[in-house]
Image (cartoon, rainbow, N blue to C red; front, side, top):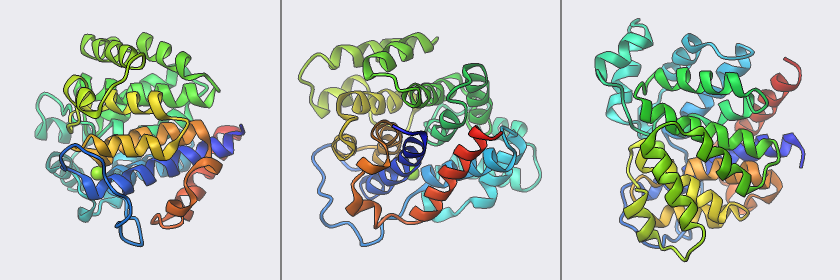
Amino acid sequence: MDLKSRFTGCLIGLALGDALGAPFEGSPSGKKSLQYLPPVLHYSDDTEMSIGVTESLIAEKGFNPDDMAERFYKNFNIRRGYGAGTISVLRLIKKGMHWSEANKKVFPQGSFGNGAAMRAAPIGLFYFNDSKNLKEVTYTASSITHDHPLAKEGALLITTAVSEILQGRTKEEILESLLHTSEIKEYQEKLKTVESFLQKDITAEDVISALGNSVLALESVPSAIYAFLKYGEDYLKTVEFCLSLGGDTDTISAMAGALSGAYVGIENLPEEFIERLEDKDKLQGLSLELLERVINP
Ligand SMILES: [Mg+2]
């Protein structure tokens, strides 16, 4: 499969997963119907921040955390469902405080929410062939708003999975690589649970109780990875499973959707929903510009 298809599939897959998940954010577990969604599918903060990450990588021809932080607050639209902590950090940055100070003022220990992992996929695309920068950039880009090791590690699992997918690895190889990537015990344990779950018949309830469905990185990234590894060759099935978990459905579905979208490519995403996705042309354009920067740096 060509890189164009994977880049576009990843970014559109992220945004569509977010948009399909957003109406069910905070819902209880159980199957969700996609039949009664509004004609236009609006995305939330997950996609808005991923757009900021992508625009910054394109404009700066690589990673510049100050530029990325500036784009986060310039793109900021309060109706997109941002978490209260992130809103406070972005407002301080807008007032002129450096991001490294602003995040400490709001989260003295660093936020361990999933706000860095939810926007990390474009970093995995940009550095898919550059494992050294992939890790450093993922960590620093996370730190802008989420400086806790659990938040940064969650983002690294997403960028690592994206880069492995772009390199054409099988799902077994991707899981193997993730098991080696994680240096934090809590993630290692959850990934081992993911590995054992893939061998069995597992319900949404099992995933919620063992892996989680909350806004914490540790309680959502492993669930998104499980959804991708279990259902990833079928984008809609992957997203529907994420929605069935309830809880932080938009973010879990955005992360799993980015992975599945990169895995199957844009041609295999559900057209009837993409047609209704807000800003689909802009997202497609950004993914192609990002690829152009990777090919012709
Ligand atoms: Mg959201």
